[in-house]
Image (tube, rainbow, N blue to C red; front, side, top):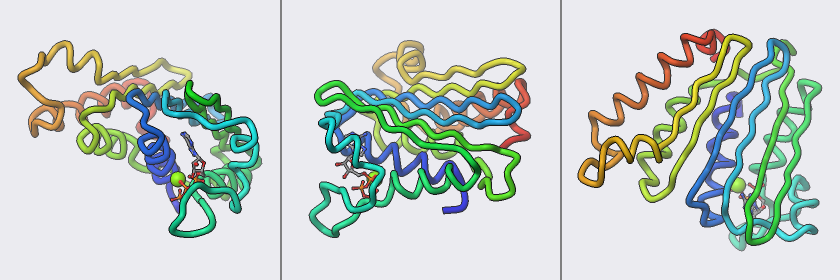
Length: 183
Ligand SMILES: Nc1ncnc2c1ncn2[C@@H]1O[C@H](COP(=O)(O)OP(=O)(O)OP(=O)(O)O)[C@@H](O)[C@H]1O
Ligand SMILES: [Mg+2]
């Protein structure tokens, strides 16, 4: 996978499969490291599974033997000198955090995070998403809970005008804090 956003998409799919109704994505760039954190309130994993989940031979899938989402994300982060950790608690939720050294020659581009997240908001309107982007110049915080409060019950999040507005306002705020240049 040649974009970090595609790994994030895969990790979000895990959270959806785990029954999460809140998924929090944070991208933090400190000038050197790009830290990607995805937190969910899904079913979580027992300690043994959580410890072994970065091993490609552990999966609960029955269609094929190996799960690759987390191991590929881990390999991609480690190729830059970074790392990936999974913390999980059964019945509580899961935190997946990857650290990339963004200046490393093997670091994939971030890719279109805004597009990835807005598409997941549209596909899973019963799930709440929060998305933050932090740079040395400031932060952007977006939350579907806040948008729902403003829109009320009559205007769903997948209304075309709302989708365009979400995409533009997130991108504008990220550009204001210099995040656009690392996409
Ligand atoms: N957020 C999560 N909550 C609960 N369990 C999870 C979560 N993420 C991963 N898991 C567990 O870890 C396993 C491995 O995840 P991984 O993404 O690596 O592979 P997969 O989802 O099984 O397959 P693939 O991503 O290749 O389609 C999953 O099958 C699931 O059992
Ligand atoms: Mg997966």
